[in-house]
Image (cartoon, rainbow, N blue to C red):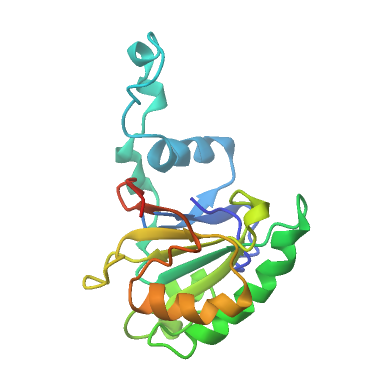
Length: 215
């Protein structure tokens, strides 16, 4: 779930959107009241089952810890059908990602603009504004808050949408570390266009159903 990104959303401080990954869902508006936030967490964020490793006794009273998917229909959601590139741009804790984040964003935007995955500027434009929609699968690039391991800067996560049926990484998120601007062209070609994981940069991955990806 991504709730903080460099993409502009709306000036309405009473509502905000959220991006749910690797679910590939965009929640268009969540009311900022504690009641609505609690409902959103119950609908999307809580786990669907109790982990078998939980201490004895917890599983006996776990109903309030589990997701309530029936609440999801109360939110306006949209499927994400574009490639998503998320870049750690967190500067407050450690400047390494804060320095590399904007450089990597600019490089990804430039390189993706030369591919079939044409760049879409914001979540709003790519998902909600019919006048800005493009044919085929596009891409969106955003800086986000801390995703772990500033010593691995630059940190990026690439999500390939499940609707890219013939793509080897469809429905998966691939996390790369120690990415520099000089790596971006190769990442776009190998991972985004061809579906190949670059082992030298690989930090981990996740599938649409939460499965861990290892190489």
